[in-house]
Structures are given as structure tokens and as C-alpha cells.
Length: 182
Ligand code: S6P
Ligand code: ZN
Image (tube, rainbow, N blue to C red; front, side, top):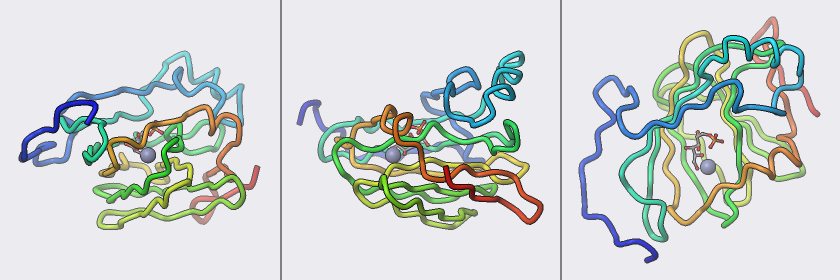
């Protein structure tokens, strides 16, 4: 172990599943280069809203550990494209599971070849196999919240997504989310 292992513990994010631990906040200005409509993204910088928050558990990101986090993506669109996370790939190929807690959204997966879309709602488990980049999208009009559990030695590579994209853009359509290849 690179860091000392932690003892067994009971972890609470609080009864309403609101983030209560250390919270990472991602604002519109943190999402440069991700939305297709650059002019709409620049216009949104005036208010620079919080797009999503990630509350992490105290379990360290170390080999053998299973850290967790709860992500809350606030509803909204940028030029018709739904609010989303930056997206990343784990440099050490590791599986990860997501569990939908509230709101509706989706899990976009990309292996560099074919994208996959998993619709998420409360109670859905989305499985991310090793080697697949992943991004979450809020396709509803209330906060979309999910639990993630991942191996502590996985690491996070955000540049891969900036270089390769995620295969689809997720836009708001008349009959629900529209997946447009790019
Ligand atoms: C970590 C896991 C999630 C994301 C979170 C934010 O492996 O996949 O906790 O970190 O949903 O997304 P991102 O792409 O900004 O890290
Ligand atoms: Zn991940």
C-alpha cells in the first residue's frame, strides 16, 4: 500500500443523499472545450453556474481500497446539450459501478471505437468495464445524483476525453435525449 489502509467504517452521505463530505465543485468555467456550442458556453460564463458537485468518501485512492463518491449534476443545457461531467478514463484499466440515486440521466461510455449509452434512474446500476471512458449526463429537469464505487488505484485521465471525445453528444430532443455522433 502506498498509503496506510483505513479501518472498517460506516460512511454516511446524509439521509437526503446530499453531498456532505469533501466536495469538489465544477463550474461552467471548468468545462472548457467540452460543449459543441462554444458561443453558448461563453455566454454561460457570465453567471458561471455550478454544473456538478462530487462528494467523496474518506476512503483513500490507493491500491486495494474502494473509494466512493456521490455526484450531483444540476439540470441545464448549453446550446441544447445537456449538463454533463468532464468525463475521464482510468489509466489503470479498472471496472467501476454507478448506482442511480435520484433524478434521471445517463452514462455515456466510449472505448475509442463505439459509444454506448446507459439510461440511468434511481435504482439503476450502470457498469463501466475496464478500458471504457465515461461521462454522466443529466437528461431531466431536476438534479441527477448517483453513487460511484471504483478501485482506488484506477487514476483519472481527463485529457483522453479532450483528445478523443466521447463518441456521442447528448442533446435535448422533442422525445427525450438525442444522441448525436461526433
Ligand atoms: C470516479 C467516478 C466519478 C466521477 C464524477 C465526476 O472514477 O467516475 O466519481 O469522478 O462523477 O466526473 P469527472 O469526469 O469530472 O471525474
Ligand atoms: Zn471513473
